[in-house]
Image 1 (cartoon, rainbow over the protein chains, first blue to last red):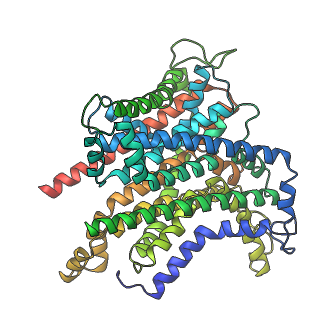
Image 2: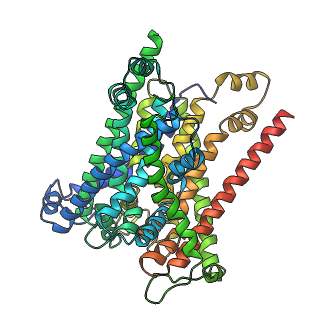
Image 3: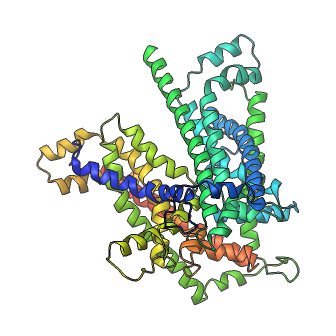
Length: 269
Length: 286
């Protein structure tokens, strides 16, 4: 029942992959449809993309999303890298168990709960809800993904170079920036990309932590999608998918390359 | 860089993360518990005080019904994902080695793709003038469009579609690690295919099965936008109920009580699993 890869397996595999990709492929195809009707092909056209450029609300939302994604993923990468380092390196410190639990909680917590918990906190702190609160919320929930990537990279990391640097009188800060960071750079970069895509995609946590004037792209897509299928939403979704797929692809390439190099190094050593 | 406790780098690293998590993870969750015991306010969202009123509301048959329906839908989604995802992951895990990275990438891309956009894509497929209805009418199989959208079935289809990658990836991880020699040994010793599957393959891939089920079931309770978009607000998940308390009904204590109950239920399920796994391990040792 295994090891052999026969025609039956190939067909099932193709069906599975079609199920995962067909609806998205249709969405992309219909975004280039001349006709306003979703299922009637009226010829190739870029008119819905053109219409996006005149849609002020949509451009505004895209800009908010981009600003939130860049700011939050950068902060999340700094914090996530430090957290990954702390968990991989320091087996004992005050509050480590709590720390590890809090880092991984967003992975299993339903987003609604994370969202409402942050909303209550922002109200409690009397922070004005808007761009800042969305960004803080995104840092918190994307950080754990960066932590995981960095922690995985640091497991099985040769520390002799770091120790040599320290023995030669390098300060801990300098050692981190000159030795450790360049070595884990691919993991940090792919962590940033993942945080960026998660932030760009997020609807639930943004909806809870937003305020007047801060509508993100997914929030706009959601409110439009509830009204029905609409060609402009097809177009903007296609663009969003393009950006996200590119980021994920890039992250995968970075990880694969780093892994290969590491394998070669271990093989050589 | 870590040898002494007084290492300033270490202090900065652990300190900054600790405080961030303290303010944005620990306090928020404590606030949810606190608010769930507070009375609903007239002018403000909550008033100071201590009450079990919000938990009392949970016993309202209307809400019990939502809990029951939501658990049922999430269970159905999980089972469907497992039934579709297991063979899928198994075939990828046993595919020729050079093909595997590409096949995994084909699952990873939807894994990271916005589930909102994926839910929206299902609308194109299921609508009255959607792709499925148009195709069936063109083929002459039906004359009137079927009502696919805005049904509980559409919600389940949407949940399965968006969550399937979350089932396949952990399953793949455990299937890929499977030692083929153990399966061959079972077959050589005369075990039939089904017996081998039941007694060898399933137990060995159990960690993947459990992780996959968790990653499908838990979001399946909360993804309110799937039931909003595909169910036309006719199907209410626990997520919808919570979201409404915060974003429209403005009953924050009740929304918090719902979240606390949901979290406790999930923790209870996890705990039951850990206990069951430990018992099973003890049985093996004995």
